[in-house]
Amino acid sequence: MSESKQEKISLDEKLSVENLNEVVNTITDAHAQWYEIGVALKIPLGTLDGFNKPPKINFIKVMNTWLVTDPNPTWKTLVDAVSGPLVGRPDLGKKIRNA
Image (cartoon, rainbow, N blue to C red; front, top):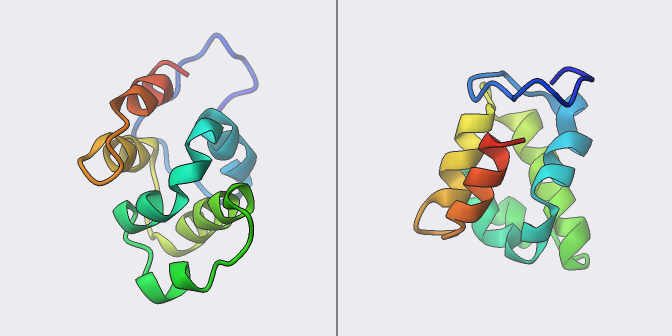
């Protein structure tokens, strides 16, 4: 995303690990649901089960793993993941769309 906060994000923008801080900061209040978010982002359960740090650290690991392993991570993918029934946080989807 551009340095200018006046620009809205493009949901179709392809993300990379370089966007990690921006992604984490946008939905940081979801860190307690790191496991559900990881499942919704299709991170293998064996990978998630290996995360054994405090929730906030695990959340960062989930976001990093998603950005590194998904061939096409986008804001839309993240909106769909957090807004869907597994995570159940449409408020976060709205927050991303309005970022």
